[in-house]
Length: 422
Image 1: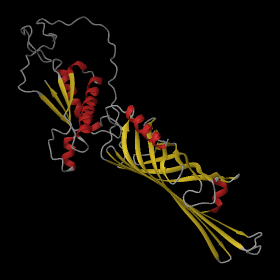
Image 2: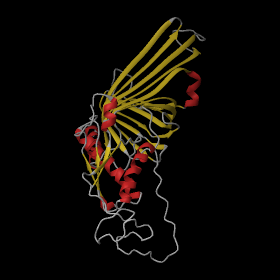
Image 3: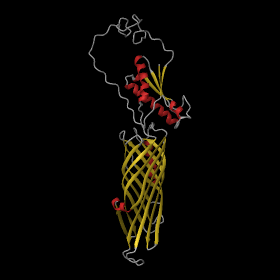
């Protein structure tokens, strides 16, 4: 059953992964310390007897001595490393009520600690739109320790659980600032008969570098027949669960999206009489500087014959893309206006939009990234009023560098889009 769940997880993601990839390049780092308002519940069975226990967070908080919870995620292009660590230390003081060894009233102190570390690595798949899912394999390490001090004597009991887990961590981009980011881990082998971790979370982006996470987390174990070195029970079920709240730091900072405003709608004008065009070149006589032009001659905006171009006109643009977006920033848009103006003034021209990348990432990934960048520039030209039939796109990936890819400055020059007008 455990291996079937692992196989189905991989098949599910593969079946829903299209050919295109999300716009994420290079190294991405996320660090999130968080607060987990965890309670504990479960049951113990021994023979025909069983006992249930249930302590909420409000019951436990007065006994907490220390605690730390933190989440870290590192990704490079498509490869992902994941680490989640929880540590809680508790203690309680009391007195012996009645015992055959120690007299009543003897002071006691009970100490306990729980350490849970989940570490995994895997690959990032796209699903649909701007959403993706991380499929990972790793290990969940659990240490539970208890200690009792009474009348100068110390008693302790420690047990450790090591379980291999398969993890799914999808990301659903609800809007520019809101995400739904659940995590599910299931044990497929190890010391526990059954273990799983479920953590649905909502993420809100406060700034380009910081975001807030809040949600719920539950970790569950089941052990039977005294597994993991604890022979005093037939079955033990334990769960830690509660709400979480954390503030995350992202590096490098996510860039804000630069929205290109669509052109204003045309203003309806009153119908006027057609202007006089004696030579039929499409330019009214009132502004025609070259009257009596032979019919069929291509002319400019003032009715004068156009000189045949000796070579295609090329516009090289350095286009930067925001995090998880194909939007074009203001600096590149200002450069793009030159191509828009030229094609409007020369309505008989066509253009090829050529996308290029640096050599970071795989060749296949860079090829598709260059095609998406070229398509994004074409989309802006079409929205500006250039007929789509006059435009075509091609992606060259990392095959046509204009500078060295060994430096950041050179790679920046290679991340470009060229518009060749013919």
